[in-house]
Length: 470
Image 1 (tube, rainbow, N blue to C red):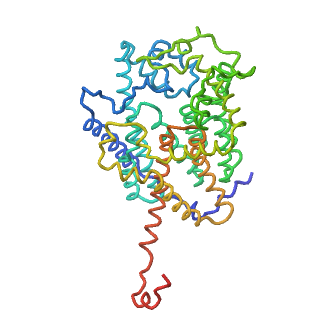
Image 2: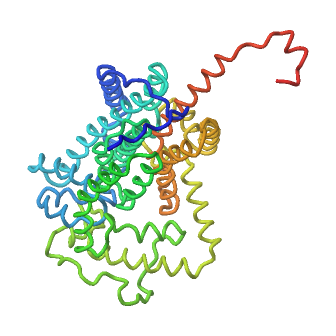
């Protein structure tokens, strides 16, 4: 068999610098980890105001199961989870088992405190991966700058102190993008890319099984051999397929989340419609569901602290009805009304990610304002467009454009889903992309700076003779 020819060495695909040593990477990780813990200790609120940095404990999150059920029925609760992928609650169930002797608010406090520590580790992991990736693209000094910006970024600090899966999702997407970029450099690993894709699938509901097909398309665009693409699809579908089948059999949906009906209605500007006056046709609601006696997470209405349990079977039926209402509304209302709602979503998406919720730590950062300006509309869009055009001008030939498209498509996918399927929390979804954008900005700004500094100076006489030639 003849080995496939290596990809052409275009300016966009020239060999990257070697990766930094692990000692340096671990030093960056440790610095970011200690920095966050020290900042939390310094800016923690007075005990009388509560120890959390934002108002919500983890039981308040719509997407989480109650720690009470995760402590008492961990496997059964995770089996009958339908509101979100299971990875976050697997982590919370593990912590609940370590604190089985606690109950009520004490159990929630113990789990949330350890979640803060774990999120500090994820925060440091993002910083380390930004450092390693920028190091390969632009060298050590620029990588240190990128790591510093990643560490100081108000959105990163905000989501490191928010008790949901946003920070972990951003870390997983950064890892996925890095592994996809390594295929762009002809050094990719099917196993690593599949692992990153599966973490996204089991962690965040926007990465459903069709995402695997999109990644396969990206690999084909980058001229990855079809055998490797087939192995990627085989591994991901083999691991994700049984879970999709379980969801279909138990809950009548091939998706990992049943929030889709609510999200669709919100996204097109309908809010949360009341189904009391809606006549649903036969088949709109699932006809075969588990018995409420199967697990407490299907029948108990409230979680610890009195927060509503969205994993209740009644909510599953409600969400299924909302999907029908949304489809009917899309057919009946003018297209302009739907597009206008998407424009509103885009405006929310452009807001600073760190402004998602008041945060006792982030709200007191002296450097918050300038970084929020850079990572929000319109500066973020202008910077991305300008640097993107500069990068596109270096592409030569159809293959170079296809290989670049293979890298950009997943980013565009996340951007599109964050606008078309959400209203209200769009700026939080923007942080999924911000570490990847930071890597791109560091690399392109370094390249631009090098070109400016290496440009030969124009003699004074020549400059004065032809002032309009500049």
